[in-house]
Amino acid sequence: TQLLEQSPQFLSIQEGENLTVYCNSSSVFSSLQWYRQEPGEGPVLLVTVVTGGEVKKLKRLTFQFGDARKDSSLHITAAQPGDTGLYLCAGLLNSGGGADGLTFGKGTHLIIQP
Amino acid sequence: GAVVSQHPSWVICKSGTSVKIECRSLDFQATTMFWYRQFPKQSLMLMATSNEGSKATYEQGVEKDKFLINHASLTLSTLTVTSAHPEDSSFYICSAPLDGVSGHQPQHFGDGTRLSIL
Image (cartoon, rainbow over all chains, first blue to last red; front, side, top):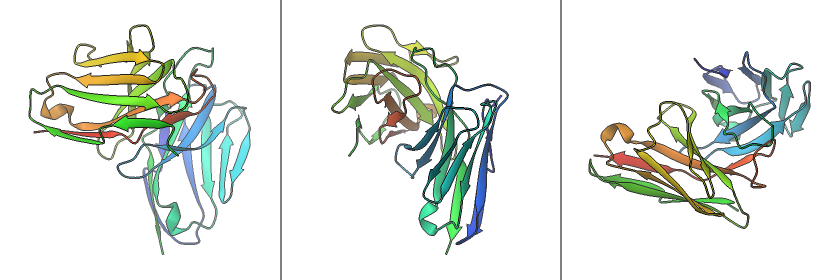
């Protein structure tokens, strides 16, 4: 059972279009992080959202954490070929000060065609 | 620049060989590090939590005798894949929370080790 359902798994769109990637769960996360991963490299952090309802913007990327902290979305405006890559959402279940690894979604392979 | 360094980046070896992968935190101490495995076209799966000065914690289904973890110092964790077989071929990635303690702080990942067992 996948704890974090990420969709769509694959997305190919034209340059200039908008898109949204979703990350959903039945579990409550203390925080949720979005990463981007290039082939043969480790994931690179884009943003961390902590508070329910929180919205963060990173240039053309808008990240939102659901009010109940069970879901998140990534919206890209006017996508560019440089946005092509694998986008991963990852949730942290326990923030009690202990050490916990991240639970990752399956990822969204995004291709922006010029 | 990279805050977590992983070595080697690529290993090709024969079946039955043991392979050691190193993960180092650069310019910060990490009492905890994490090891993930990623198969082609799939996401990262947490294998184990490496704890400095104590035993590693393994996720369900991960054989602790197969994947030996040693957190030798506050900046170094090693993962040894013992008697590797072709099904162990994968992309292994380590990470460390930047402040050394988990929580809301983001994790920084190494660049991964591509392991290919012939």
